[in-house]
Image (tube, rainbow, N blue to C red; front, side, top):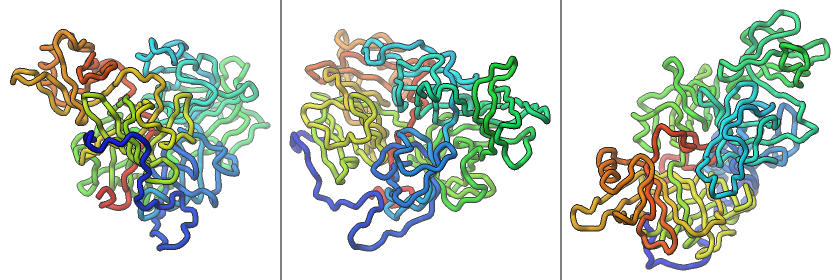
Length: 530
């Protein structure tokens, strides 16, 4: 994992390994790869084709349905949108062809109860604010610095802003992967999904929203476009309309249509779905799809087999039978590692600059390689930008902030790579792999993903649940694998200026990483990682 200084080569390395044609365009000869029909649900992480769940889908022949209207091409879509892609995935597991792309937002409406209030999210003094919460018609939402924003930002989103939201439901709230603020022309438009209740049989019902608690009173009349099937209690529908001025009525519906609550048919041969795992009354769900696991289910990492818990971000592959997803492969998608460091070296392995290896320089503490692939979401220092790539990184100059996870074979896979305009402090967050309290005569230290920082009593500042040298190492001895935040200020001497063990009771955006920032490994070929 550590990149030895012997191999130092400041500058850009374009790997000469064979470059597979990405996106399914004509490849000028060779054997046509075997393709597997697949239905995929996940967040869009890139364009130039469309990247979903780590697969780059060629979309030149696809049909598009965006907000229940036929669209022309990818221009109707945006990063962070949770989409359903129907098509096929090639034998390589990372390219495919889409026949259709479907997107419909979770909700559109006015923001209320936002907490904390708006702030300047570019001010380093506000860096400690990592999540915000709000409601729309009572339905709870959570946003983070990793959420994709359009015409608003993490800090500027305010009460009464009308927004369109796409995200993952965790059983209580929606973890937003994308938030788009609507302009004045669309500010009166409302879109809601839920289950009809208390229908009066004529012109009014209560719509129970996704959390099963929040509700909206909906009224309609002869001008409303209605579905062919009669309205009745228990019917899951989408309501489009406007805010109502009538007392005791929230929304006047201009259109009501029957919706599928999980985007899938009752039987599908092969699906790949990314979402938040939740357990309700003994039944697991991924997003809104019931899922079952058995002894033949494969896990990545294998430790997941006995450690599935509520709130995990997972990617699950398998067939849907009678409406239930039978998990054949389960992959952890949370990026629980955070690395901020100077770029030491870049090795690019494709023509688009979306695949390769970035070597990070942590000064005297060491170096580490991080793999970047078609599931990595790129962001420049001014905001999300799909055109940004590894070609834009200047070794020895640029700083990056990477969110990643570690595989069973000790590789780091980036789920997000962001150019960092602050170029002073090295930061590393992750579980402690090794530590030495200095009792053996060697310097006290902690190691996270092969990066080793010295801990010096009287020089290192201790934050969080411990406040001194002895308490810190006692905590690590008691709780193996503790997650720590380490900071080393310039000149990066390898001595931690501060270490923090966070209070697990405090909210942490790592628990629900949007993940729409995902990595890929082969979901279709067992030996892909070889």
